Length: 87
Image (tube, rainbow, N blue to C red; front, side, top):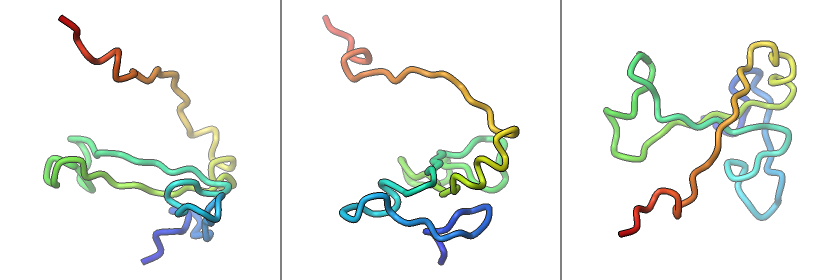
């Protein structure tokens, strides 16, 4: 299984840090992680154990070649304190 390769071009992806796995800190690549969606015939996590998701690596070169196809969105992360309701 070639899981440490760019899903687009097949380039080997290495870890940016020797002390961690490539899936924690890839060098010149990004990790994309998704739970799936209802409309996908490929993957929907509803059929998997809770918390299961798929992840892919895409190298920076492929991202740059396809940047006109990438949607960039702004979102804010909620902190745990923002999610907790206090009485």
